[in-house]
Image (cartoon, rainbow, N blue to C red; front, side, top):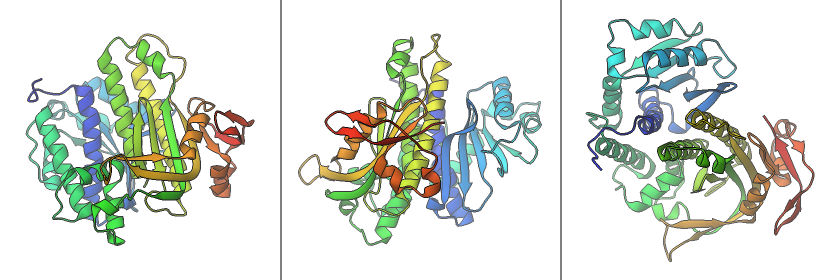
Length: 401
């Protein structure tokens, strides 16, 4: 493989979305003094049925804004997308100040102004910004100290390392080496969450996720609907790989952005925890917000996948299950902190509840629903008792839509 060659354009867009998420958060911290944890960045935000924003950024009290990564798209496709997404206000875009559109340099430099054309398509009150590769490279240099000369696989991987080093400096201290343990912790947790643990007195990275018993942990599990059918009907294996990469990248970011722990991916399933290594009274509500975000990410992933195959699929989106319980975190090798596992009845319960969760639905255990605030409990509908293998009859609740 020639790592100096240009990467696949669809995978490049997935990569750039993650880079821009990190870039926006760090820039708001450096320029506006907003703590990283006070900036909420979500991907695949549902604007209207079947219509999703690439990225929504809400930094502290500043007005939120959107970022669309349209590298590799034609001018006509970009115009159609901008008008479809932002040509009118929706509940998700109310209060937003602007839309940033990331495009190829050739389009940005066109003699017929792309900026003028797109600005005319936006709903009143939404301003437009155009970022091309040169402007994006300038922002990357200012934020991460990395000179991005071209979109080759080798340079993009070096950029990822530069970003991870910046995160490690924030999480563990400026003098920290990006060793395997630090990289593992940055995979499972947001860097500002790790910084909070360090500031609370946890100095040695080996102590950030100790193997022990954790109580009142929220387990969240999501898996793609009709996954086998999508794979069977997909002629191009690259479409399958890129769809799963997009799903994994965006669901991981949702878990850690909402203050949780990304635990693992198993095939087309993702599992995360809230309440490890420390808990808060808001864990259950944060986990529910994360679950709602996973529903949108799953719907957007399925829609994009469906566009690239002929056969209409029987279902779209994700099944989501949530349960509350105790979790045992253990070392998978003696004295290891880089290879950690978890066992919990709540994980088994989530797997059983997933079987009765329909596309776009969230099914939760009775204990988890009882831990929610009154206003959030009211949105759930009680199910008939679920026959859960090796567990028994379980009382559960469904949140649909």
